[in-house]
Image (cartoon, rainbow, N blue to C red; front, top):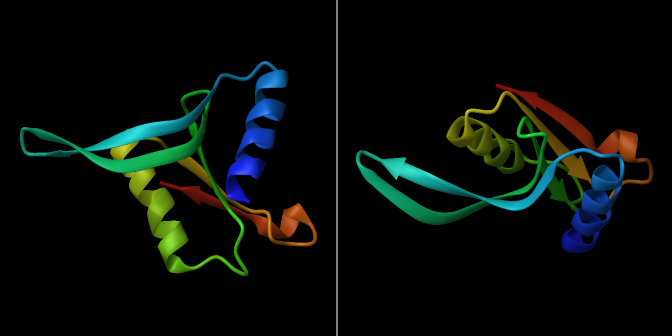
Length: 98
């Protein structure tokens, strides 16, 4: 389900003229080694806002940690956790600031 929501949100954001990157790889740098560890940001908007899409009963600390990791690795300041498994999307938004 998450991939369908990701595609729809990607389309909607792009249609408003925003620059959006889908599935942006996030390598881990350890000392002098670049590790392609498999981290991927669901959507990166205007090279500033990290968006992580979920379809879960409720957010957990792991979800927040995931976004914080992306913020730190990419030196971004703002992240949004979006949960589409809610009756009103407003109830499924969590803003994370680094």
